[in-house]
Length: 371
Image (tube, rainbow, N blue to C red; front, top):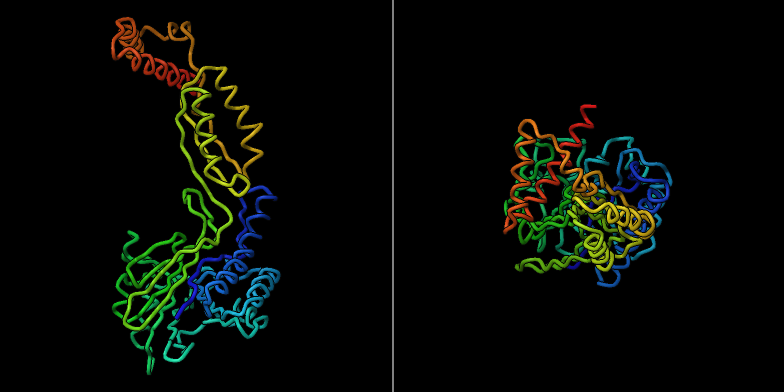
């Protein structure tokens, strides 16, 4: 048995914090990911695609979002199995009734916790969410599902595993040993947006398109191969177009900053990269001007999205600035001690110079805040 495990498409996600062009690009990329998954299934001869919840971002998407989803799935010969999650939970008269009206033969909505024999001896056990939050383990029903003649039992669910560090009263909490407890050959999970192996028989595929900063890897789906009596063979396959990078750089001059920029651009596809960059450091004034020029004239045009926070990059004070530090109080005494270290020379002189510059900058900030 070979299939694709995916989850957390969240079609219709608004991406409200971005400019209009970026919002449009990210929205379309999530639809395009369906085509990527369909082509991946065909390439690897996977007959089934299991979507472990949160197909849609809300329970009230516009009609275009539903039509785009269904018509894109319709293009491929594989069978698509859609599980309601916490963003698009199942309720009478809700989203999934609208989806069913559009559905074609190869798209099935799993809105009830009822087992299905999808191939000879291969049973799919779904645990759809019927409410946004439940205090019960949504996969407990697997223990009561009858699967006569089963050679393979595949669970499909949406929720959190205790190992994530959630508290015991968190909603939609799934037992971390659910695969073993319910005699599952594989448990396909959604909700966690990163790729994660819980154990050999239990995986999160993550979202096919990354949707938050701090996860360097683009989105994936999982190719899963099952054989009775054997552990699953699970292969992550890239589906995501965009990378969402977050970097914190401490810089001392424009040369070092340029080197960091060049390394980053060489390691990614700039037009498909969203970057949130935080800069800090004390640099010569001319270097700070050069860094801002690189940001405004180069990086901001190369990257799909660029958010830079450079308030902690300050121009290095001159000798007159340092000499002007107050000679009274604790700050004055600290400045005098550091100047003495600098004048002595030796191994600590360089660090004392940097500390004196930092003392100047922090004193200046405090004076500006007080004003």
